[in-house]
Amino acid sequence: MTKEKEYRISKTGIRQVRTIGTKNWRKRCSVEGCTKSARGKTDKCKAHGGGKRCSVEGCTKSAVGKTDKCIEHGGGKRCSVEGCTKSAQGKTDKCKAHGGGKRCSVEGCTKSAQGKTDKCVEHGGGKRCSVDGCTKSAVGKTDKCVEHGGGKRCSVEGCTKSAQGKTIVTAFIGEG
Image (cartoon, rainbow, N blue to C red; front, side):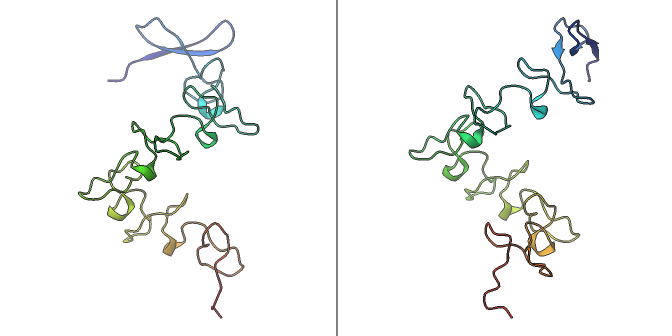
């Protein structure tokens, strides 16, 4: 059952919304077409730059929790394993590498579950290749596996192989 909402523009020009029958009005993002709630003392949602931002110069990401930094710069809850500086995952106190976050549901598997699934990549979790009949996992921001052109590709003209490591070139060692 969807509750009906009513909208108005406040005296200060801010878009507001409330569920009919309630008395509290909530600020809406001021970006045209956006229906998300505005964050903090700003007039924008988190996606459009509203709310508390990371204090590191040049960073535009949102600050996390009671910290003044984004996760990348050390904000939010950190892994409880001594010497680890990664962020804790989900409701756990550890990072993925130390067993935090959602785990694969296959008995005996200790790997991290991927995406909105309850399995690791090896057991069929995460985004899959979009090519008909392929059951491999999609790579990076693409919708295909490496074999079907997914992931970063080699930048050498005429090469169709995937890039290796953090480079954008395939290792041509021993190839003619």
